[in-house]
Length: 235
Image (tube, rainbow, N blue to C red; front, side, top):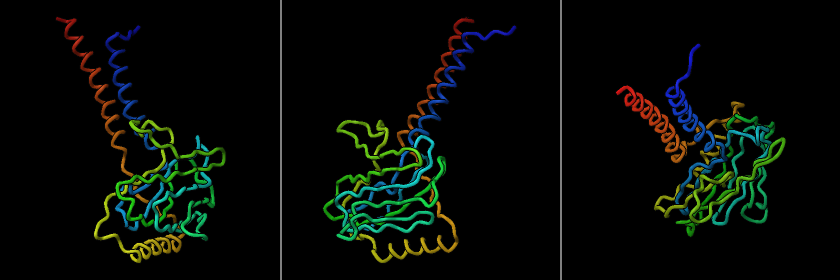
């Protein structure tokens, strides 16, 4: 009958623990509704892409309601294949909400995106604008609207709001016509092909990367301790 020695148990525990931490942290960090880019210049026209790859506790997504902050001079939602869109309040000025409703529920585990073009006001330089998103699902909903308190790590939030950091204005604010032409052309091409355009995944959270690396280091450290103890006992 084979026996598992304490040294082997410790070795297995250290390696498995490190691997689980390395894998689990990036998965948890990526289970959010994100916005890209996360930084834009004041006074510029910027195309914001909101992405998600999950539902509500496994339930398929039916709609995204994006609350728009103050500090926007214009808002232009893009027509997305597979989605209908409504701009709430646009008839009386700048929209306060953009509601995207899926033609068919987006199953959990599939990535999808919606896009809005905004013009950031000149006086928003140095501010961080929040774009809370209510994710509605076949069963339940998740309100991605949490904001970190002063001194709180935003990565500790369960449902953080997507954020855009506004940098100082530049000489080149971006051409309104060029952005609209690019946006309209992309939407037209996608509709003509009968396909939903897919963007590259957002970059991994740097904090998640560091924590994942820490998990691997923990596993390696456990292995080193086991080997050192084994040599000490033999001597």
